[in-house]
Length: 278
Ligand SMILES: Nc1ncnc2c1ncn2[C@@H]1O[C@H](COP(=O)(O)OP(=O)(O)OP(=O)(O)O)[C@@H](O)[C@H]1O
Image (tube, rainbow, N blue to C red):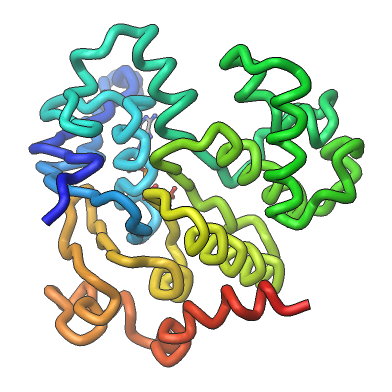
């Protein structure tokens, strides 16, 4: 068994309640939300680890603990064996810039920068010279099929194209791990399929570790090497797609995947071919 690239040990996270409100001369007490309860998991190099669950089950909170955007209340997260809680703030910034990239649903592009400069941004921050960063950004944009719009601005692109820019921007710094939070959820179904295919094709070429949050079961089955299912802040099952379909650990998991067309997830590899077909 290889060493995990990320390890989560006994992680808990709760959000404090908002201050009690006075209501008809009584103070209404609100209780804390337990967003994560005793999470233990290992993520291995090169896998696409998908986190699924209903809205509010804790997926985004868990994803953000992996790079300490949300530090856990209790427990520890290790990256390549190193406890994140021990890093200085400068080391944490370097880790997020170089090792653990992130792609959001909202694209989060800079409107006033060209596509090329958006993608080159991470390299610029890392001090890479102009010529080299533009070259690397251009190569990455060609890989995501956007070599023809390098001088455009984000508002000139469709949603799918903007998300490809977001992906290129995250990948150009060559992170070991990429965290993706509902990254394709804002896209229409056809574009979403194309993005999934693109991601699988890029993964074929360069095996990174991807941690992908989605509430879409078919997306989880199509992309995931392993799938983690969350329910009310707890991990209820972690396994391969086959394992989860054939041996759901709880009625919740069975219910979750009921009605999903499981014939399609077996086609995952062929999407890479479809993408490469002119
Ligand atoms: N900043 C916050 N303050 C208070 N409560 C929060 C905060 N962020 C999340 N929560 C609560 O923590 C729980 C887990 O939220 P989280 O966003 O991690 O779930 P999720 O599975 O990603 O949900 P969704 O799919 O809707 O994004 C929810 O009950 C949510 O309301």
